[in-house]
Length: 544
Image 1 (cartoon, one colour):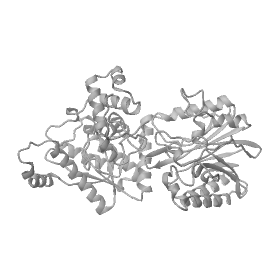
Image 2 (cartoon, helix red, strand yellow):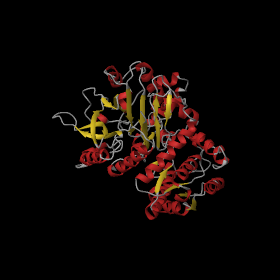
Image 3 (cartoon, rainbow, N blue to C red):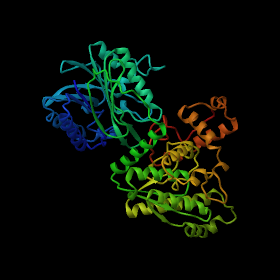
Image 4 (cartoon, rainbow, N blue to C red):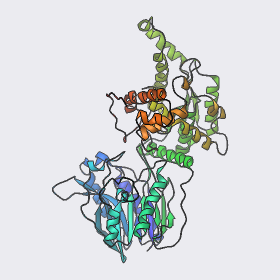
């Protein structure tokens, strides 16, 4: 049997567009003489559809699209994810479902069994789980079709399985001789190897080949990396889809071919994920271009490089907004970066505006020394300028803050936090530097001076980030232990960090929760981002 893996980029809610994309791929699979073509999870609605499921007509539109795709199958088999109504009189209204289409009609439907409700997932809010194991016959094979999370509960792979059942094992025990898992598994920097080893564990333990088709593309904060694959019954990788781009590959699941497995270079994967996520967010939201402040610092430089790669240099606009505290080399570094990238570059000095603010507030502020109030005013002037240019000319404003700054609250609401997308908001500062070095791998794009200069917000004379923050190597280490691994203060201290520093930073993380709640949505690349998967209270008192 020749199976085509249709690793496609869908748009949430665009049922007609997703249908048309699937039909085009089906025609390509016919040319390749495939017997079966497999699409990702919830292919017709896009993933995750969230509360779109409650809109009247949404489910019916998805069912109509499914029928239209079925009519184009002829003898070709198609496995595709869709939204199926729950026909029982109890439970959630819908099923996360997969259909086998062939000979012009729907031949079989299976429902997802395991519904994730952790991190960014909230499927139990919408879906009713399957209550049975259904196998699907096709071309003399018995297919065990599962959906994403159904394959993530191999009992002997995880130290603590989340569920009491293993749907994939149950399918094989009932006679499945070919496993198919359709998936929308989001990218995380440390996830690729884990996912591969887990799938391989299934194959080696159960002794049957497995076809895994993963979504690719960005939908809001979630990035899907593709990397679809076919594993032979001995654990050999017969074929593998590309990373971070659409692909259509054909393989025989009974082949002994082995193309091997590699994770790829982590920083390169991260860069490609951020480029893909930026491109998809901008375009799927209806924008054609982006604008950002270019300070001459490392964060705005890396963000500009990602934007230029994602959108094309002609569609990126960098704005330098120097103040009386801006060093001449900051402007020069920003201008050089823009020249190296070939993006549009303009200068809007903020000193006259800031001085007018000072004049207007002089009476009310009389007798009080300058403090962070004046620093924040400068940041908010810059944010206002960027939003004005966005309103006037139509580009999306990109926020340039990194995870370290957001974690510590080293950022200004309605200032440097303005924007529609936080491109690197889940990237720690130390990793931002690694991205800059990757960008410069062939030639200098990010000025060396930008990489080597001590980071500074330049909001007061001779300011440096480390005046208020621990060294970023220390900050990022503590941040990871607290936010991603959720360690207590005592546990972090026992890992080798100074208690005074840990207590200070932990307090900064939690008292600034209100800022992050109002931040631009960011692209998730770590195991726990400051976004939809982290639900911390704002009004609280924490003693550990």
